[in-house]
Amino acid sequence: MPSLFHHSLTKSPTPSQQNTALTLKDESLSYAQLNQAVSDLSGQLIQLGLKVEQRVAIYLPKQFETVISFHATSLAGGVFVPVNPLLKAQQVEYILHDCEVSILITSLSRYKQIQPQLESVNSLKAIILTNCTPEQTPAHCICWQTLIENSSTLDFPNRKQSDLAAILYTSGSTGNPKGVVLSHKNLIAGAKSVSQYLNNTSNDKLLAVLPFSFDYGLSQITTAFISGASVVLMEYLFPKDVIKAVVKYQVTGLAAVPPLWVQLAEMDWPTEAKQSLRYFTNSGGAMPQDTLNKLITQLPQTQAYLMYGLTEAFRSTYLEPSEIAKRPTSMGKAIPNAEIYVVDQNGEECSPGEEGELVHRGPLVAQGYWNDLKKTAERFKPLPHFIKDAKESELAVWSGDTVLKDEEGFLYFVGRKDEMIKSSGYRISPTEIEDCIYQMESVSEVVALGIKHPSLGQAVVLVIKPNEKLALEETDFDQKALLKYCQKQLPNFMQPKAIKLKNELPRNPNGKINRKLLVEEFNHLFD
Image (cartoon, rainbow, N blue to C red; front, side, top):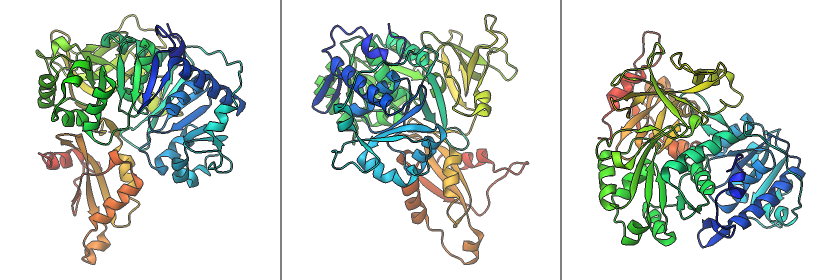
């Protein structure tokens, strides 16, 4: 079995290297072709000067080059950093700076959008561009096509399971996103665990609709390859396109987040889709009960897996399909190779029915946050004292999520301890949005809230106290200008769905804005 991330291509139980590994539209790559492309690029990365554990950022949508780049970076001894293709130049610049990226792989069009920001990234040694010819390639950049054609065989560095493999950036409740550091062991253990309970085999064909910068999206690649299965890459515009793809490619496994499931549940699934789809999975937020019922009615032969996870531990729990009718709101129990505890404020294990923090132990626990010891210490902490076999150096992930466990050991989500906004499967930092809005002179104070929404899970709502000068001049606050500014500065999933104006914002005794009161005030905004 594989022990390193890139081994999933060469040591998976694929009956034949001629089996299809990736499909994009009407083109496919076999495992043999994918392995050759990975080897070719890996050698070139080393020749470009990539050293062990230096970072390679991949800022691309789901295409062949994206998957090749992940595995080639791993084979070359580097650390791959998937950058969400929805991010704007400002967010991309922060990630490249934060983890001191050595090589950037992106497309010509994306390069043009972020070129001014790249000038300040001093660590950047090389920029590789896809989707362009040698003649179109700007000076100081390298054409992907030319690079691959000039490939050569090199000796690749030896790596261990404990070595770093990837950094996934995820929003925190305050400030800029944090880079979650994953080892080869983390990635392989996660793939083994998920593919085990999903019963993945080389006969499966998974449809990848989620971004690879999202651990749930990346896992479609890892679980497929470790099983010798095939992955269909897709950037969809409309939900109906997803169902069409299930039919066209005879997809057997589909993973999505609640907002997409809400839309898919309202559509008619043709017989061909019902016959091919063996299972579907949900994570990134609770599945609405009505949506789940509609999907089960539409897809009576398809198994539904409800899951809970966090980037810091990949995946934590799942609910067996056979249990859904009895306990449809449950997160289930621990996935294979994970231990899950519910811990109270005193560090004691909670009794059934008692609310506490979810704590995850096991080989899926990440290595911490990149270059941030303080935040790492807040989330990655020693195991609770009641765990008797804990090693002195062993750390667990303290999720920040409040859950409870019933008498039979099934877990139920209660809420978040922090102020994180969870929308469309994305974890969004309110502070990141607020810092952006504060750049507008018309804004005196701003609070970004996550308000419950029927299809998004939570929607971003801005509560703004206008600049006092505007009030004195009796000038109306220009909401359209603010929305236009947000569209330019923030990715789509961070866009506000509503703006509320207040002359004064409520405050706690310590003088801080009382977010809880504001949430209560606007909690039924989208009912």
